[in-house]
Every structure is written in C-alpha cells, then in structure tokens.
Length: 240
Ligand code: SF4
Image (cartoon, rainbow, N blue to C red; front, side):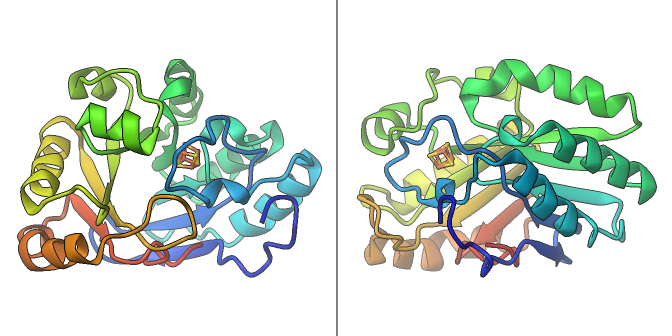
C-alpha cells in the first residue's frame, strides 16, 4: 500500500456500540518504528503531505459530530500527520461540536502527548491517546513482537496514555494470559481494545487454537463490558 493505490480502504465509519463515536482512518507520512513483527498497517503511508492533506480533508468532511466523539487513526502515530491535517481536525471538531478526540501513538512519541493535549484543550476538546501495548508480558512483547516499549510498568505507560490495544490469538498465549492482559488494561487504563490477530502475511501468524480459547473462555467475559472493544476482524470498526 505504501505510496500506491490504497483507494480501496474504507476511511470513515460510525461505531454505534460501546462508546459510540465516529472514526476516520487518515494517512500520514508513516510509522517511525516499523519493527513490529505482526504489522502491515504501516504500509498505508505517503511522503507527499499535500496529497495526504487532500485525502484526509475529504475523509474529515464526512464527520458529522453525531456523537460528539471522534477517533482518528492513521496506521502509525498522530505525529505522522501533517500540520494542515491537524489544523483541519481542530477546525472540524469545533465546527461539529466534538468534545472528545482519540488518537493513536507509539511509546517512542510519548513526550509529544502533553503538547497535543494542550493544543486541543485550548479549543475545548478532551484528548484520549491510545497505545498498542499488545501484551503486558514485556519479555514476550519485546523479544517476540518487537514492539519497542522500553518499560515493563503499566503505571509508567499510563502516565502518558489513556487507552490500550492488545493483540490476542497469537502463538504462546493462553486463556489465562489473555485474561490477565485485559484485566491489567482495565486496571490502569480507561479503555481496552482487543485485536484478534488475522493472517496478513507477516512473520507472526494467528494461532487457531489460541483464537478458539479466546472465543470460548475470554470473549464471553468481556462481550458486554462497555470499556472493552473486541475486534475479531481488524475491519470490525468499519475502517481499513
Ligand atoms: S508501531 Fe504500529 S504501525 Fe508501527 S510497526 Fe508497530 S504496529 Fe505497525
């Protein structure tokens, strides 16, 4: 997808269940980490910032403000978005009375989060930052997934981030480890988003036995939990 035709991607959707919000998949100049062994999302990037802005503006123009909440994802971190896109997001939020906005961010950019919160707070908008932690088992996360989070402390991560994404359904996980990760997420963060691994041709593949364990033993525990989003397929939010 990098710098090629990614017109087939759905870039706007409305999430009506659990924390209802609009969601947009924008395009930035690309993830700066790029090492996660399960990831091909970062392929949706383009170095031409003017082209990114044209595409992003078209997507943002679909935002209606129906729930006064907007989630902006961009296959990387908010820092990858160009300045014109960021200004246009603020303009749209003000115009559509959006009071809460969610962005995603890698741990390497944690020191940029405070300024982003200030920028939006100045416009009366509350910022929520989501981080892909994938698992709180730091040895598994760093040696196997190569996630690039250099702390094993959820408390430290929660100093900067409000919400966590977890990756489940991969080799080595058990029902117990998956529940443990979700419970840690719920303890230290406002919301948890569980992504079930889908085969995307990357070195880390889904494990059908682990997914079966998830469906039978984990899913029923959280299906009605309003603080837990569960994506059995990575397009379940309607974008991607
Ligand atoms: S930080 Fe995110 S976008 Fe970048 S490689 Fe990892 S999962 Fe992919």
